[in-house]
Amino acid sequence: MSTIALGEREQASERLGKPYLLRVRCATPDERGPRMTNDARRMAARLVAAARPLRPWVHLTVSPWWARLLIAAGAQATADVYPTRDRPLLQVVPGADLVGLDLVARDLTGANLIGADLAGRELVGATLTDADLISANLVRANLAGARLTRAQLMSANLAHADLLFANLARANLAGADLTGTDLTGADLTGAELAPAELTGADLTGARLVRANLTGARLGRARLVRADATGADLTGADLTGADLTGARLRAVRWSARTRWPEHLGDELRARSREVEPGVWLVLGGTAHHGVRPS
Image (cartoon, rainbow, N blue to C red; front, side, top):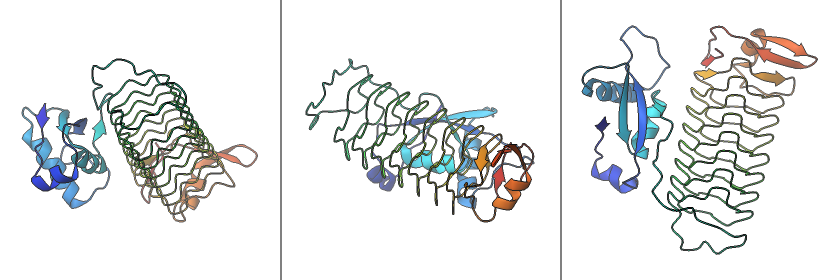
């Protein structure tokens, strides 16, 4: 495993001691991968070249700053990107005063946090599996690497929160506000997001497999290389969204679904009607920066 050292400026802008384990693909020169900026391509190439012996995948331990850069270049996160501290389960009673309490990497499994005010709080690497966060205030909270599997987040306010590599598999985010939220590399497999506000959210490299995004608002969202296989986008608004390299195989959509202007006709041609007014995206190679298979 290789460790990436940060310069002083990156250290000042990122909190140290919070590494993320990534898998970087060692592509051969003739492989045609997803498009990326020249700077990101050169950075990924240098990192891969530094690993010896050359393997199909290179594991790198990096800071959040580098993690975002490498995800943009096509890297993938491993299952547990932030190790939980060996700390006992924290029992939280409804209405408990959480001010001043260290919640970083804490085990809050099944905690009752309905309506809790956690705006701007540090919950990096916290375990919130099956936690009840209905109507909680998590504006600008740092939940990077947090485990929120099956968490109840209905009507929660997560605007501009940091959910880098968070595990939200099967979480219920119905009616949640995720405006401008960073969901880079997050796992939203089977998540309920109908309807949710995701305007301007960053879902680069996120997993949205079988997620329910019925009526979700995804205007100007970044879904670069996101995997939305089998997701439900009926009635969703993706106006101005970036779907470069996204996987959209078997995605359901309807006449009310609003695709980015340059993709509507293409996706319509690559879909079949499965019921009146509802279509399913078929496999195949697409153009204009979207990949349905």
